[in-house]
Image (cartoon, rainbow, N blue to C red; front, side, top):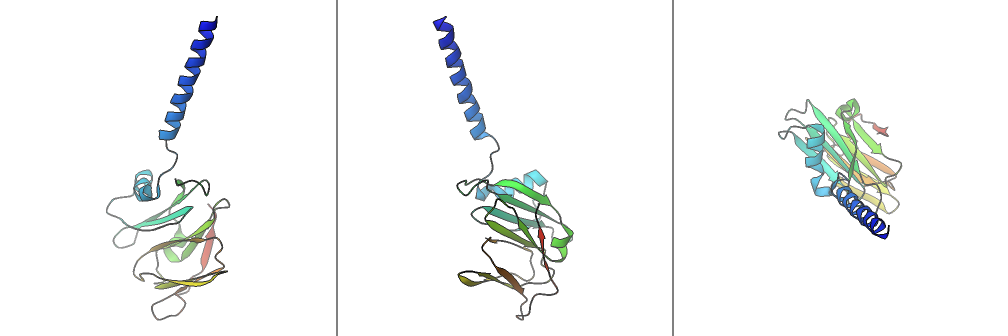
Length: 176
């Protein structure tokens, strides 16, 4: 009787160790440096497409596009918690709003926001306002962009190369 209990306990320990090993090796997210390749693989995005991406502490945003920008695909990743270093795919595909304007993506459980655009409005600079002040970032007016910003951001304004508000854009909010 004692021998069967010992064998059963040993079997349970081996099974738990195997489960823990498989759990650790399974798809529990990707590191920040692996996000682009993971998105291309999951969404079957051609290697020939260009990518604009930004990776923050808890969110990553990507926009893939072909040479003439007639076709594109977006991908958003987020971490399940602030302590995690691994990102999980949360949203992907296309959005007509990304093709014509700037789209803000937010998740209730994420401390960052993503702004993604094909940049048809030719934004060349963005000003990010928050409690600590204003930070300006340069953009390439001829290329799509993806930005990840803190959810503490109070205002985001995009400007063209001449310093005017970039086109007739409106930031659309999507909560996938």
